[in-house]
Structure formats: structure tokens, C-alpha cells
Amino acid sequence: MRWNLEWVRTFKAIYETGTLSAAAQELFISQPGVSLHLNSLEAYTGYKLFDRSARKMVPTEKGKILYNCILEPLNRMEVAEQHFHKRAQEERTTISVGMCFETFQYTLEEHIATLPFNLIIKFGEYPQMQQDLDNGLLDLIITPQKGNQPNLEYNAFSKERLVLIAGCDTNTEEIEKLLSNGKVKEAGNLLKQLLWYSTAADMEHLKNFWLTHFKQHPDFSPNYIVPNISSIVRCLSNGSGVAVVPDFLCADAIQTKKIKVVWEGATPLENTLYFGTRKKTMYAEEITQLQELLKEKWEV
Image 1 (tube, rainbow, N blue to C red):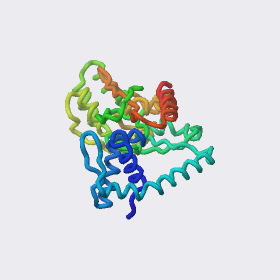
Image 2 (cartoon, rainbow, N blue to C red):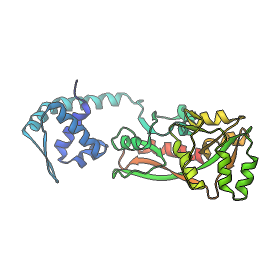
Image 3 (cartoon, one colour):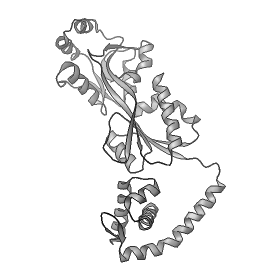
Image 4 (cartoon, one colour):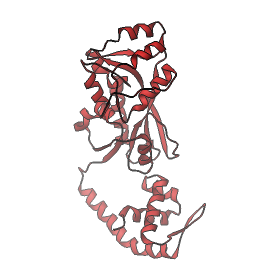
């Protein structure tokens, strides 16, 4: 096992700035990310490299020795990096973005080839996306959940409405009549008898919809668990069954009458969508370009 070069760069920044927060600003990463790099380097070397205090990071004797060892070669490497970067005028910036699979398909997939920078898309759970953003592994996330990390900021840009949809071959006439007459409980009993679709990652949609509109936890399990919401829409298109999904992900299928909206609820259930970014970033221009592209897509 070898040490990570980023650990050494972070160590040098802490040594020269004197604090974790100043090192984080210099490196354009979060303070937890700086701490993670330092802890990893200390674990690798087996030595305590700084005495920590509230105001300043004071290097230990081992820390001073390490700094003197790495200073000259690291400076040479940085000079070489700048030299070759100047020659690589066409080098492209790389932006890492976290979002759900369906959001990528709906918003960015068709525009990938037009972007003037490299793009890495990561799918996953929202709490992990927030952690990766805070640690500098992601530059932008799209999330319905706001975290509490002090180095991150969240800006609302759109909403998604959870709707009950059905395949066009699904007989929902009696259910819709009961709902229009306010007989929600009776309609719920009939809905439970239908074939339900869901995804493993989005069971929360069904649970929240049922709790909000039927005032109880759903006491049934979906019949089919498929990979993603796009799969649900394709399975229901011109077929039979029901599901609860965000409206923007099935808008095209509704417009072409492949599926239909059965119910939005007496008061529709909506989630606010946020752009999550670090407060300090060196990729502000690229992130703004992505945000404008995404907002345009949602407004269509």
C-alpha cells in the first residue's frame, strides 16, 4: 500500500496555513475532507503529525521532518504540473454530479455530447451524495433532501408532484368515481386489489403517498419490483397495473396516452428539488451552466 498524493498535498497546506479551515479554502475542498486526508496520512505513517488546538495546528517533530522531506519534490511536481498544463490548452475540466438514474435520463442524457467539459455522473442514495459532495468527490447534486453540512448550500429550483398512474388497460372507473365522491377509504380498498409496480430505491414514494392521502401505512406489497421508474412507465404503457411516481418522469407517456393519471390526491403531495453545491468551488462557471440546462428542461 502507498500513500495518496492528495494526503501529502493536504498535509503541506495545513502546515503552511496553520488551520484546517484555511487549508480547506486553499484546496477548494471541505474541512471534513481535509481532516479525512490528515487522519489517513497519520494512520499510514503511524505518527501524530500535528498537535491540534482550537486556533492553530502545531506540527510535531515528525511533522516537521515529513514537511522537509516532501517540500522540494512536491514543489517540483507542482511546477511541472503548471508547465504541462500551460501546454495543454485544450484540457477539459471534469465535473462530478450526483443524481438519481431517472433524473439523468430525463434531463442530461441527451445533452452530454454538447457539454464543453467532462462529466461524471454518480447514482446513489441522497445521504451518501451529500457526504460525497462535502468531501469533494462530487461538485453538484440534485436532491429532494437538504443536509446540515455547514460547507454546503441548497438552492430550490423546481418541484416534483407524486401522482398515482395506471396503464391504459387498467379499469379504474369505479375507483375514480369513489375518489370524486370523497370515498377515499373505499377507493383505497379497491386499489389494493390491483397490480402494483415499484422500485427498490423508491418505496418511499408509495409510502408517503399512501400516508398523506389515505392516512395510514400501506398494508400491501408491490407485485413487481423493477430497476427504475423508467421501467415502471414502460411496463405500464399500454398495459395494466398502477404505481406512484413523480409527475415529470411520466409526462411524455401521459401526453401520448400510454398511461393515465388516476389521482393526485385532494391536496397534491409535492417534493422540492434542490441543487446542492459546496459554498466554495473552483468550478462555479461549469456548475452554473449545468444548473441552467437542468432548469430549462424542468420548465419544458
